[in-house]
Length: 220
Image (cartoon, rainbow, N blue to C red):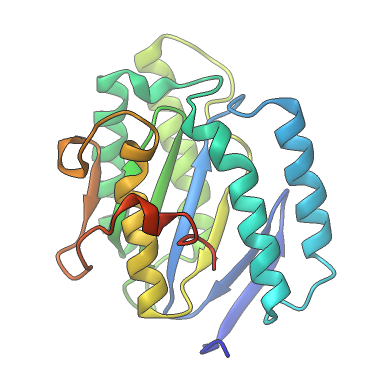
């Protein structure tokens, strides 16, 4: 049984979102044009299916896990627009993320900047913190303008929506942090977690587990 805390709001854009007071959130944001059409269609079908499911049920968690996995295998392969392959772009994003978290009164517990997507594990510090929706909307808007300028391009930088899941337990949060930190290894970018420059995990979270442990770690 989930330890359900105070639900503040649920809403839907292209994906379902659920904001819970005092929770840590696992958030994945992908770049525009980073999924092939068949994967995007699979995600649309799953996101439509999840709307009719009780959000407190195991079926909801299962569908949410399928929703995540449907995109992650393509994202880890570096499909499509991959701006964070450019070191200056990744460095600038990390700087802006860190600054925005402080300004918005959020704590960054872990993050990883992959070539065409980012993973965050973060929580609101207190009652004065921005809610999840404005936190993410403003982060995406401000970084898109700056990062497009570095790349001398225009147009959409981020996909319009993002994936989020609030952490049901400390164990789930630890597993998710391990997944985030091991993502560059799983994606073939480095051999060891400590070799990747654009990732972070707070001292409070447990050391990364082995790659074998990560296959069922996220969204469940």
